[in-house]
Length: 370
Image (cartoon, rainbow, N blue to C red; front, side, top):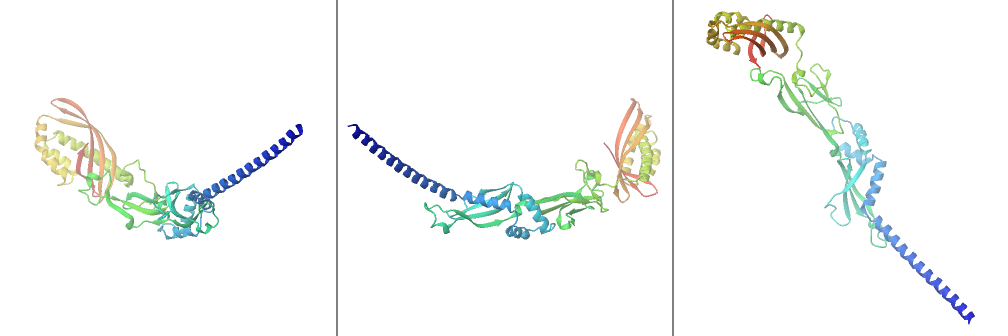
């Protein structure tokens, strides 16, 4: 009886082992199938082909296709070699890709855009590799690069700069011609109110150049050909040639004499015709200021009859701008003490005066208090 039980145990063990082996074989077979399916599925993903393509492109940043694309792009201010170095430098940054939705034309193609930062610089078309049809087991074909196109126009930048019309602008050693001027006749902000009467005042122009691969800084040259830098925080007075010391001295002397006589005339310290004659050597005949002085004589006569007087305490020439043709715009501050029937008053004045310099004398044309 014991012998029969022992024999039964052996048979059971053998059957169990065979069963386990069969299960293991089935499991291995199943896992092999699953693994093969997974591998084929992974190979059939377009993203896998794009990952491999981008990795190869990142390793070799220059090929004939890219060189041809650069050569075909307008870049008259840059050589092919300069553009090549710029593009290589750009492509050293991380290259990425994104699927272009709604493209491809069929289920067996897929289009992707190539990106460098925010710039799109090309497209890649993938298609299913039908040559592998006999090698796949589950009908999932791998993808291959079918077509690539590079377009670096997305890497273009532009330069725009506004300078005096007498200045010039260079890009990469090339002077920009008039064909790159997009706006002319721009008034100096410090001279705006004078252009109507003085149409020959200096103006500015705006240059714009679009076809720059990468970034180029413009070089600005003044009227003497010297490199200069525009201070964006300053007004347009920075473009106006400073008045020489000798002329400043003459203008300062004129300012002192003119302001004193002008205040005395306006206050009515002298009889109007006499006060006008005292002021006349400093005023241009028939000018705007001359007409205003004559028109004010009735009111001045009334002040004169009532004993008005004025004493000029100080006169300061703050600035002088030469605008051409012997014409200057001068800024003057003055202080004076005026006496009327109402008592004594301290007065602070600021004036902008346009004067003309004939070489022998200086005369006022217009006067504006501010």
